[in-house]
Length: 446
Ligand code: ATP
Image (cartoon, rainbow, N blue to C red):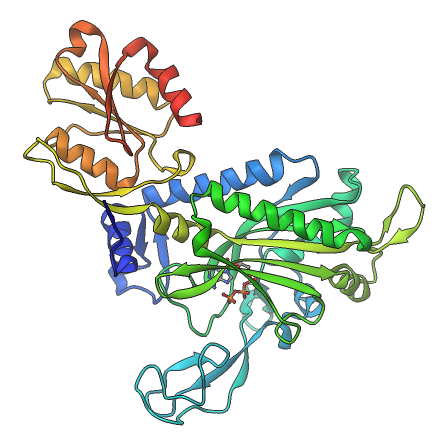
C-alpha cells in the first residue's frame, strides 16, 4: 500500500540533504537564502535529465541543433529584447507592518498580509526589474555594466543567422540550449522551485507564419511525451491557457504547463508562440539582416517562433516528487525495516543504476565483488557498499532509487552466480556472473 505523506516537501528536502542530492548553499557560513548545491547524487540526476532531454530534443531530431552561448552578452541584447525595461519586471509590494515583500500578482493585496495578518497594509505595487547586474573590467571607475542572462532564449535569436547559414538549415528548424539563467526574484522559495540562479532547457523553433499552429500543437505533444518519460503522472499536470491581458504583448498564444506541487498548482514549463518579435527587434537594434530566404519562393521572410521552455530544477523537483514513495515492505530480515522509502525513478534517470554488495566483508567475497564492480562501473553508474546488514543496504539503495542490487554470497564462489534484486518488485533472481552485464544492460535500457 502506498501512503502519500502530507508534508512531502519537507520529507524530500530532508532526504535530499541526508543522501547527498541537494545541500543548502554556503552552509558553513550560515547559508545564503534560497541557494542550493547539487551534491554527488543530485548532480548525477540532474545530468541524466539534461542529457536525456538533449538526446531526445537535439540528437534524435534532424530539425533541431544545439548551442552553448556566452552567459554574459552585450548589454544591447537585453535593451533590444525589452529585459532592461518593463518587460522583465515584477510588481513588488511590501507589508507596512512586517516589511515582508511579495509579488503583487501572486497575492490578493486587498486581503490581509499572509505573513503577519495585518489588514490593508500593502504599499502601492512598484515594478522591480529582475535582471541581475554585474560589472566587467578590472580598473575601478572604468568598469562597464553588464547583465547575467535572464533567460537562455536571447542568444538563440542573436545567433539565428549564424546557425542557419553554417548548418544549412531550412524552415522549420529549431535551436536548443541548456544553461544557467539568473533573476533577482522578489519571492524565491519552495526549495529549488524558485531560485535566483537556475537552469533552463529551451528551444526556439523557427517556422513560417502560416504553419505556427501546427507546430504549436506538435510541441505541446512533445512536452507531454517528455513529462511521461520523466515519470510524471499526467493527472498532476494542467495546461493553462494564458489570457490576452496576461500574455507578453508579442505572443498570441501561451500555455503554462502547471503541476500540482505540494505548495499549490504552479508553473512547471511554458510554451509560447512569440510571432516574429524577437528576430525583428534584434534586426532593428543591431542593424543586421536576420531574415531568411525561402528556397521555394526566393522570398525574404522573418521566421516566426514557437518556444517550448523547460526548467531543469523544476524538472528535477517533479522527478523527486513523483518518484517518492513510502511503502509497507514486510521482511523476514530483522535488520530490514518493515517500511521503506523508495525513489521509483524511471531507470534512465536514476543517479546510481547498480549497487554491488558483498554479503560479508570476508576477503574471498570482497575480491569477487570488487572485480565485478570495476567491470560494471565502466558501463553503468555503480556504487559499492559492504557495510552493515544486507537488509539495511537494500533500504539505503531503495532510498536513492537504485534499480538493481547485485549481491555476492558464499555460493557465488562455487556456482559463479549472483543475486540480482529489483528495486520496484523486490524480487530476487540468480544470474550467472558471465551473463550479468548483458542482463543488466537489457533491463536498464527497457
Ligand atoms: P514564473 O511565472 O514561475 O516566474 P516565468 O513564466 O517567469 O516563471 P519563464 O520565463 O517562462 O518563467 O521561464 C521558463 C521556465 O524556466 C519556467 O517554466 C521554469 O521552469 C523555469 N524558471 C523560471 N524562473 C525560475 C526560477 N526563478 N527558478 C527556477 N526555475 C525557473
